[in-house]
Image (tube, rainbow over all chains, first blue to last red; front, top):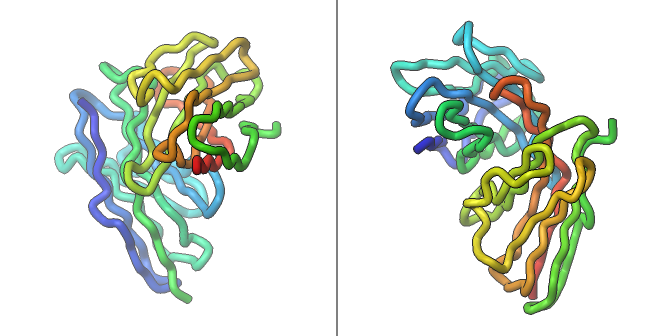
Length: 115
Length: 115
C-alpha cells in the first residue's frame, strides 16, 4: 500500500534563509510525487511534481524538490524563504501500478517564515 | 477558466439534516475527486470519478455519504443524516488525464458545521 510521511508538523525559518520541508514515501513501484501548498481558507494549489527523468524538479514560486530513490524521499526546498511562503505544505504520492489515480496526501507541514 | 467551483462555501446545519455539497469541475477535465479535511485526520480521499463513473469509493466513511456525477460538469456529495463528526472542510478537485502523473486542481472548499 502507498503511504507518505511528513515528519515535521511545523518548520520555522527566517526570511532570506534556505528552507526544507521533508517528505518520505512508500510505494510498491516507481512513485509519482507531488507537492501542494494551502493558504488559509483556500484549496490546495499545485507546486511541482516528479514523474520520471531528472531527480531535481523545479516548480512554482522558486520551489524545487529532489527525488531520492534510495532514501525514498522527496524533500521540498527553496534557497531563500519569503514571508509570503508561510502556508501549509502537503506532500502526496500516487502508485501508478496499483493505485490508479488515487493520490495519498501527507499530514501537512506548516511553514512559518519570520521577517 | 474559472477553476473548480464549489457551493456553498459555508454550511451550518443541525444534526440529522440532509446536506448537499456541489461541485463544478474545470471544463474538459475527466477526473473528479472529493476530499475531506479535518485537523485530526488530515486530507482524506472520499471518492473519485472518471468520465462521470465512480472508480473508487473506498474512502466514503459510511452509508450516510453518497456522491453522484450526473454529467461532466456537475457532481454532488450528500450526507444524510448529518452528524457533528461530519464537520470538516470538503474539497472537490478535478484533473485531466495525460498518463497518470496529472495535477489536481482544487476548489475553494465547503466548510461544513453540523451542530
